Image (cartoon, rainbow, N blue to C red; front, side, top):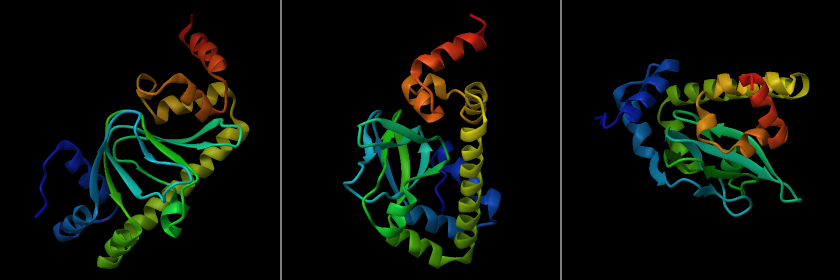
Length: 199
């Protein structure tokens, strides 16, 4: 029997059933195979090159996925907020060390699946295969749209799109990480924000 123990729990169920009509038994299996974990702000969930990444569903909070290059410069790849999925998919699927670092921007509660439990979940019902196919399709579409923004949008257009996709995130995430995600310098972002605010 599903325990509707929190607003976050109910919100996850609503998001799952938006794409697929899951039975109560299937939803029970989903939560049974997922492991709940809590992380404090600035804690690292996945360390680059040291461990494989789980598949992560954010119940509450904000995670940042980033790549640190050979010059020790951090490139922000993604922010994840409530009900978003994240993780290094190649690392997860092939059980190899992650090329990314995943860090908590706030106190975070997550559900995670290792590859064994993920495979068990998908094998338990065709509905999970369908759900994750839709999820991965939407993710690919989103990444393709971001590529187009990165190569064709002005800095101002990218910033305004960021505000639309991540409302209120500016209150949580340091400006240097937002600038990295947008591919601009923190100083440029600061000047852009002043310009848009009319100051």
